[in-house]
Length: 392
Ligand code: PHE
Picture 1 (tube, protein in one colour):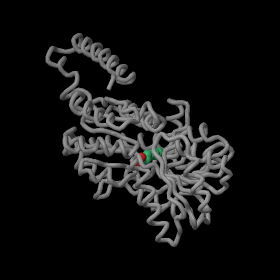
Picture 2: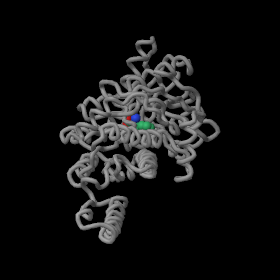
Picture 3: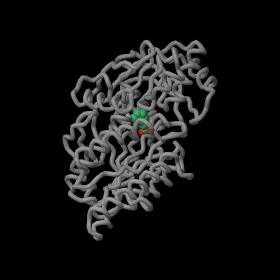
Picture 4: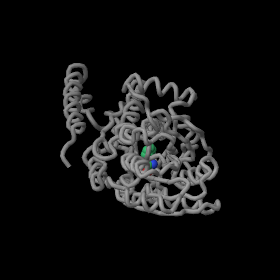
């Protein structure tokens, strides 16, 4: 993997800051103190791996922005354990293989004390075994596939899991859309999509619904006419598409071109500005579930919105909010642990209770997952609109 632009800039600025810091230390302190740089009383290094480029770049960019904002605030408030926090970010380019490379670098080269990431479940699943083997706590802000935290006791997440999200969307389909005959269109290259599709189906059938067609595709596909034609022939009352935003937008567009009128709906993977920029008018009247809405009047959300907008000049989405909370929850655990030792941070994370964040209260259960409400969003007049909150 080539050093990425951010990685490169990071190294430059680290070198520059390091040089300035050593000069200052040289001027102001005795010689023994000047060894501080990176270890001991130096900065606390936190790793992050994210899809800053590539197909799911919208996920990584948002999540990183939220995370970076949290680190900045923590440092402004004096850092942790009397030390500054340093966020080291690796771009995994939204690609399988690169997530493993990224966390290996963060652990062996950068010696981070904990790792934040990924958004996409498939990439979290790839990195988790490496963190587990090295006893480095990993917190995924927003991977919802249950298998992620099953990798081991060093792997955490601060969001709900897909058996819940699947249930929410199955009930939403029957109660709100009044659709009892539904077709599914699943991305077989994403653990996220396969999992969510399966959990949706289990609940939907249990509640007396009928799955009239089950079609599949692979990440990166651009033509969905064959699958949509087959789905149309089965006459569903709605179509569930648990994919990521790029394919979701194309699928909805092509469905409308084929004259399919029924609502299409998805899960949190739909959340990205690209859903609207790619899907355009076709997205009107579609729905998806996610973790948070910027329309919430909760003081924690409004306060976060203000700070995020001031720094990035855009409205934070669910990944930004979860990225922010993931860094704050890690910081809270490090503070309670009183040390940066991986085993002790892990033990403190397990004790996370009633943590008030932007995405609500976080309590980590014995399986290192969080239980949180889901939010339903619709697309109206070319914008995302809050519909309802569904409690666990
Ligand atoms: N939950 C998705 C996954 O597990 C990722 C995601 C989270 C996407 C939040 C959008 C918003 O892959």
